[in-house]
Length: 355
Image (cartoon, rainbow, N blue to C red; front, side):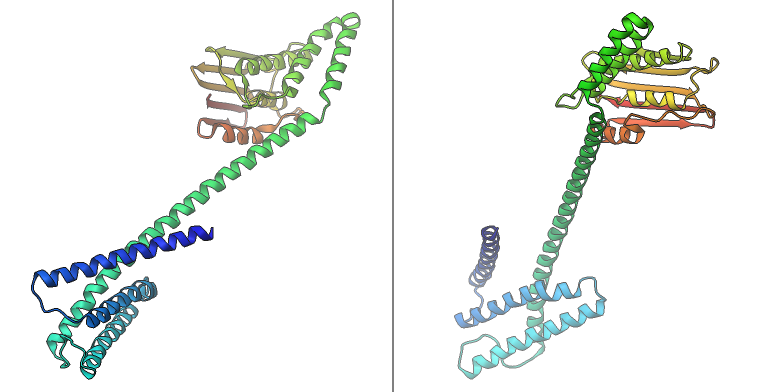
């Protein structure tokens, strides 16, 4: 870190020395080409040192003080800067005359000498002001870039935390039941039902398939075959038909080809689960409609149902609509949209995903 800072400072100083060398060489070349009167080496050293001091004083002291301040403050500081510059110039003239140092400047203060001094001051003031504004723009842009970068990193970190939270919630839900114990128990119930209650074998198999799907380890990419998710929806509906003696008024239609499409597990199953908590499932005139439309990699999942108000809702064992939205935001970002249209009697859920 220290070496990097030292290297940066070295490049800074090197660039400034190079530019000042070019500037001084350029002015001396003009003097030579235009056959102007030349000064002594001591005079050149003094005045160019004065120019450099003026340049950096204006860039790093005066402008930071007057930027975004009332104009009269800036005018006062610039005037003081001009007076100080003129005093130093005429001080050197007096010094040169006192010690017989060759100089082109006259000791007499007149309009012409003042005009030349003011012109030189304004020339250097303009150069240093342009340098300060350019430096300020670069600094502001860097700050904006750093701020945007920090914001993006913060958003990414936030998304990662949300994903970790969701994954931990799903893992927690799965860990509430020992899968080995569960499947052994279901297998026992199935074998017992074959001889004692054959009508229960089908519901037990459906429940076993659903629980196996929910508790099986998810692949590393976090997605499952879309056809598997659809199969679990069908199994979930069939299981509930057994619960209600096949009196549920519900349809599940699929259009399009699943192909090799993959999807996050439980994304479609979760809103279907909500139907059996809040929907009027025995309304013949207004049956529950579940439609899945697949067009290449575009998926549209729609659920329509009438509400029921008299029955006590069944407790949820899913990850819930809130977590569903968080998972969609984490994995699909802008490639999904959820629409919920709700009235006093009806409820419509629409999900659009680009897989």
